[in-house]
Image (cartoon, rainbow, N blue to C red; front, side):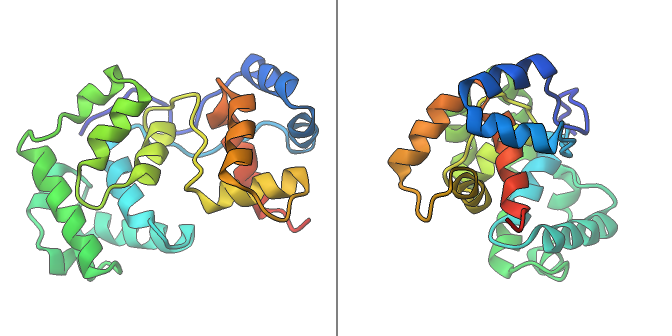
Length: 208
């Protein structure tokens, strides 16, 4: 397994949060209501990568169920153990055959040394996204989620994440959100876009 040494909770400080709030008074008001957020992270990069592929276009609950079945099937989500499975067995965990094939090929690529996940921690965000997006079934969104939850990068706010966009609309009272508007808010949050993302996700779940 490729560990980053990161905690199983996304770590951020009060000083970072205060700095973010000074950049955006509307967000600051929401932070005041919500308080500190404990969002689960994953210090194992390979597990986080496979989890990201599983999570594409399905609910969090469904993704957790599939991941639990995969762990039950192979004992631990490692490149070696994924290589020991066929795509049909992975599919029976509840995913599509196409996605099962992606998971199998990613395991083979990492196990054979085609991608050194340990080297990702030395790369900039854009390079990580470029390297991971070259893998089958891995797009920008999946790479961005790995940046946040496995590598704990500070400044990731994903336009490709529907919940983040929904949270942004709720925060600012918007009916629609253009990419240009999104990027303006993203720039305002920098260099703490990942922390802002935690709050936007939380806001997306609010009924009002």
